[in-house]
Image (cartoon, rainbow, N blue to C red; front, side, top):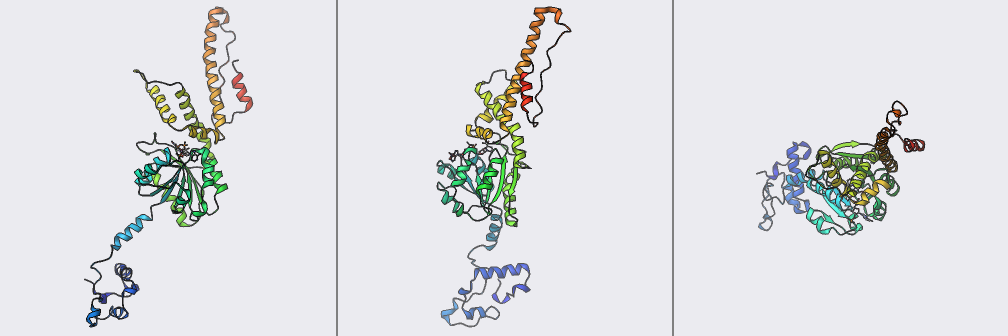
Length: 380
Ligand code: NAP
């Protein structure tokens, strides 16, 4: 049992003793001690009249108001936790919120529709009014709305109610567009991180292990707290096992048009064919069925956003068209040759052969108007 007389000035104490005396000062605010009681810290308690004896404190390790170590531990672990406001609590917003909550972060949700019950079931708080949301002073505002509604949603947020230097993050499937809107709309004291998890509720249903997570630190303040906050946010995806890929928004859009937009387009074309599973599915056919499932379950708004808000998408659509035309010509060209052989027999042998099919220039090389015409006209 430690009596008050053993307490020394903090500078002369070991760290443990200093912690004890710090604890004492927290537990026993000065207004709890009468002047004469304070004097008793360095000398044996004087005899007090019976009416005052009840106030004389002789020990600090009994009946503490709360557990200070647990308090410190909680404060330390909370410093690694974020208050994240998910704006756009649809399919993808909810999917991400589950992971945030699983990792111990606090999630506030806001959306056009009422997701009160869904949010509650996940362990998040739902705010129908953006003013109420912003007054919670989240560390991070995560924009998770459809690409086409992002600008109007961002402009509708009462930014003046947020703490200065709040971190804005987006997860849109296109990147140059939200980057430019953020830079236009958000005051300089807000930080900006543009991201794209390259997976969704279907492809990331079981695990995020080794799935790519693209990010671009567009504007982050110099202070340690702001740098740490970005790292804490990125850590959520690292901890889930994502492959972290830092690249510019422009680079992302170039790669994504040639990969993601093509994938979604093929999925949607195949969906129109209404493919059915058969008793003799090949592995390749199973892949096609999976592709339809993975892409057609996303909203059309999402697909439309990939097209409208990525300047490279139009070229990819043209390339697809040309590739399909060229393939048909290759098929019909072969058929044509067989027919001519049947009609004219050996007289054609060694004579004029149809030219080989023109190839499209490699992806990433822009299609010049003359090249696309050449591909289209070849074999005509
Ligand atoms: P989505 O159709 O692209 O977006 C749905 C969300 O946008 C919902 O929260 C919806 O709110 C909101 N929204 C739509 N129109 C709105 C409007 N006019 N005003 C206000 N809010 C509006 O589908 P999603 O799959 O949930 O995707 C959300 C974002 O994540 C998109 O930007 C998408 O590109 C990106 N993303 C999606 C995936 C994926 O696999 N799904 C993967 C990576 C990134 P309500 O529900 O309240 O109507």
